[in-house]
Amino acid sequence: MLSLAFVAAALAWSQPTLHHASPRAVLVQAQPAQHHLHVSPRARIVRAGGGPVEKLESVGEPKPIADALAGVSVGFSLLSKAIASSAIAGVDPLVGLWSSVVMGVTAPLLGSRPGVISGAAAVVVVPLGVMVATHGTKYIPLTIFLCAIFEGLFGVFRLAKLTRFISESVLSGFLNGLGGLLFMSQLKVFTYAPAFAPAVACAAICATITELLPRVKSMPASLKAVPSSLVGLAVATVTGILSGQPLKTLASTADPSTFLGGFSALPKFIDFGQFAAMFTSVPALKIAVPVAMSIAFISLLETLLAAKVVDDMKGEPLCALPAPGTAPIQGFSVPDKSVIAMSVGNLISSLLGGFGGCGLIPQTVLNLKSGGGGPLSSLVYAVSMAVFVLILAPLVGKVSQAALAGIMLSVAFSTVQFGPSLTILKRAFGQAPPAPLPAPGMPAEPPPLVALVSLAVTSYLCYAVDMASGIVAGVVLERVLVAIGGLLSKATGPKPATA
Image (cartoon, rainbow, N blue to C red):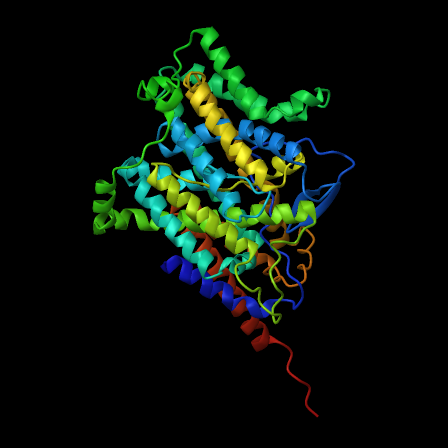
């Protein structure tokens, strides 16, 4: 809780720099392109916090059939990502699928922002993977359970409004650190492969198709709906099988019963006796609590950011926060409900041995572009994922580990904010125009040199320490440097003329 308290204090400190008008969240940033979309040239592009968001040409409640079909499309797009997330966390592939199912069901039932898709996410499994590498998988249920408690407290005390004060440089640093961790987490697939060259070739095939297929303009519209990562996964896996190369598959490294399909694939409750012993063990809590706080904080950012993307694309300000000085929202706001829904989903997932998840920006955008946007699309997506597990589990077991690594390397590359980071660097040396004026109600961006320092510090700490500490340090350092700069400016400013 100490990290969250530091965040609250640091963000509250920054409030005097606000412009008193209706706010727009700074959190709508360009995110990892986990699913590539073909943008209609006729669509109007709006800017929101530096990231392009495509505004839908038709708004309003989606038709039930279109909403349901959009959910099926989202389910396909998340299939490979959920399996790859399981690999990063070091658990059976079906764990990621069932984690996505639980998150997809609980989010719309508990009042999350309609249109947001929640499921297995890299921001969750990367910190888990680091912990698992040192302490094993037995601490995952405890960690996700504690994470759910932190998220629930955040929602109950209506603290979602604090996240709007995080600057672009801190968010870019967070994404840079996440991208670096994603990249490093996949190297073991190649170092422990039976044959290094075939594994690299398989990953390269998958990554190339994932990146280049969406750029083919002459594809039929029906094929464009198929996620490029799913196509890459299938092609790379089939190529590996036909070549006869010694490639590890998901089934070859899991329990034989994992991919039998049918009701044997259903998730099972954890051992509550062992869980209770860990929950009351100080050594276990020392391991789990820091990781849980880190996951909780970054999951909050991702989920609220996904909700704001829906607001911008549909033109429905359900997640808009009241301007400073205006009457507060009575009851729980939509962002607070979204956080509470995520908390309950993670709580249930932890008891089923899963690792939960959070709001997913790429799949949320895909949902809206496919005709979805209501709660039905999230429910259908969850049901679709469950069907994949129960019926298609034998096929899932044949997927190559190297092919999955290719997908995650592609995600890692697109996660790193090369463009925004270069812009911040150029601004610091006067080689780029200054940052645009903030939207009404939002804090101003820090001076260029301060932004560069906070970007570097956040990037390094998110990669080398943990992501929550990196964000907290970036926010606090940024506010301290801005305050020092203001004091120096007053001390060295021009003296008033004397008569």
